[in-house]
Image: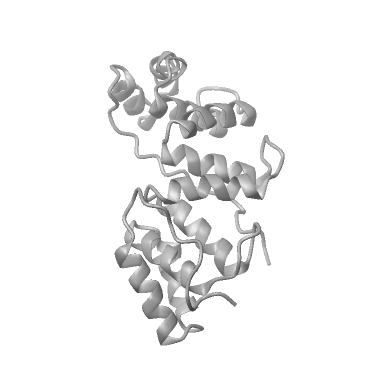
Length: 202
């Protein structure tokens, strides 16, 4: 099977933060005025502003306004991730999964994907679903949990999850689909995701 993550997409959600300057920095970034964005967000990132840390990490990852530097990208995303920023948690998980700028560590990848997914992060939910579906990163193969996660990710706007949910449903029993749908309905963001299912493990 091909690597699950040939590339990963950043879900930015750049909104006005509590600190003055972040809104200006995010607006400048979205307008591709990276010099202004950098000037606004670097002081905030250094002061511990999680949204600014995530955005600065993205700039280093993409080489926008700065020389591309994956180690700096990881460092800034990690700072934001430890403060609970789900977008940054997803990036940290993806960088651990691919071994980009850090030693490849699939256990760490799963940990960070789960943290983001439990906050309702669609891409992280999609990634965990792939791991359960294809028995990757030490995860058990479990079609019910894969379907559940893709159901959640689809509801949050992940189009790949829609297709994969449809494909896996053709290989599932009605009982498995019903369990997956029930798990989806009863789970709420901020709560732990289930790690086992009644009917889905192979």
